[in-house]
Image (cartoon, rainbow, N blue to C red; front, side, top):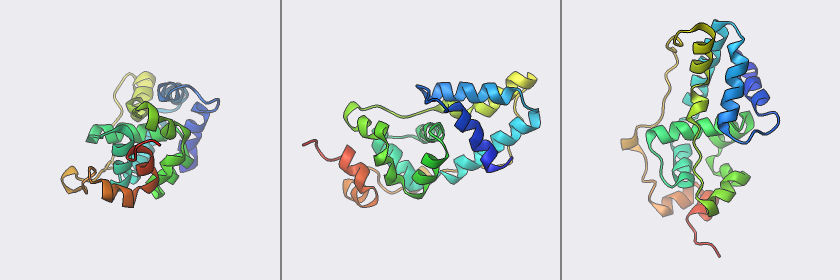
Length: 177
């Protein structure tokens, strides 16, 4: 599956700005269910590639800051939330995690305390394959990676956070004026 084809499924699922990533996941599952099982599996492998490419330390730090903490599973779910926002948001946030400060939902979360997770997005291929074939999705050969938690820089170090993620730090660490 080509990158454009993978993201086209997400783009169609987000076409009219659904209210939640759960709806995005549901729509993507509905679309993929009608496809050949190998195509569903290929979509799942591409999702694994997106997860591997987005498994960066500074993106994890951004998720930690935005969500008020972030476990390994929380980081995966946060990336599911990013994927539900489309290709441009994912690409920009992987390149420059601090750019997440520009998203209206993230800006609002600084005041509301909203947490961004969408584990259901990560199970789109599995759900579609199960519905289409009645069996489990075959294991992917793509290794989904994330940094080793023991080797992360100290996300509670506000000075370091301010250096690496200044715009997000201004939203989430500095007291409101």
